[in-house]
Image (cartoon, rainbow, N blue to C red; front, side, top):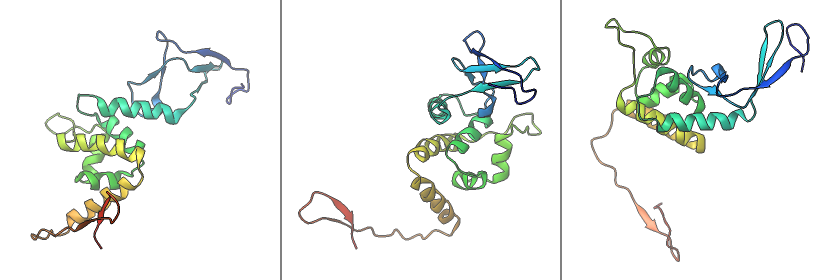
Length: 176
């Protein structure tokens, strides 16, 4: 492999627990990779070879979704991007303004000295969205439709829902 800066040969070395690669490309400052090849050049240029990045992102997302502590702003951003949702749509689904989401993701500080955070419900919803959106594209459309509908004045009348059992089957369906 050649250096893109000076065109010299690059020397590759596997990263270890003692000398891991900080995976800054994830947007998270606390993610380090072990067992990847880091190429270094005499000119100071460094390149890393990260195989199966999508699988790595899946593992990172799973760890973030399952963590007990509230999500940090960077973790919220990672999960939003993992769910492939633009900030505007994600904020709409969470029921918050895009400005607030931006403050959370960018660790903006309030006048009181505290950083902006998501509430407990939005934190949990963020985790569910990231988990489900990675498995089913249609969930994003459903959530956006619900977010839009919640802006409209809700009817006080409860709609009647009809379901019917299919003939010669144990399956249920929405009645026509």
